[in-house]
Length: 172
Image (cartoon, rainbow, N blue to C red; front, top):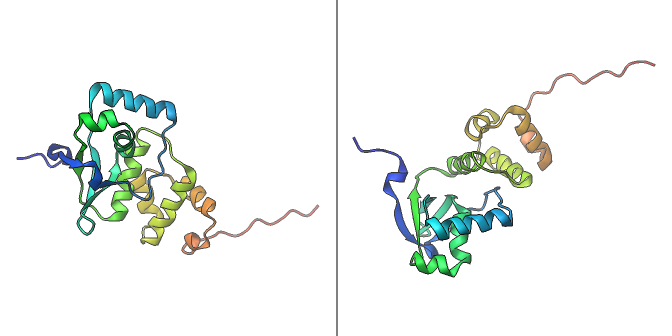
């Protein structure tokens, strides 16, 4: 039986056909980005960029690996050594599942921009995903989802919420 994990089918893709997604909340500080460059310079690309192939645009949209992609964009020595080709592992999932994949990859190793995470929670709700789905697929508890919803200030995110009785002030 052949393995089913996408990593067994890594392909070389011209960097011009690889595009960042619009929702990645992960950020890397300059010292870590420099370290990533050093790592790729010394060891080469040891992990592929995970992408979704968008047939309409004939391009590969990044799900995970934006900073590895960025290293090639910003460093001519890496681009030349790799002949402008990035190692890509392709997943075929709808947008909501790709967003969840991005978050799982990122949360396993880094930190997130809170405003962008709030936007992702809002986007997933607009795509019809429940708090339970978000919790399961993004590894968040109810309180974290609530805090991210509160940051957006969008009342629509609370439209299906059940609210308990309000507190009653004590008489002095």
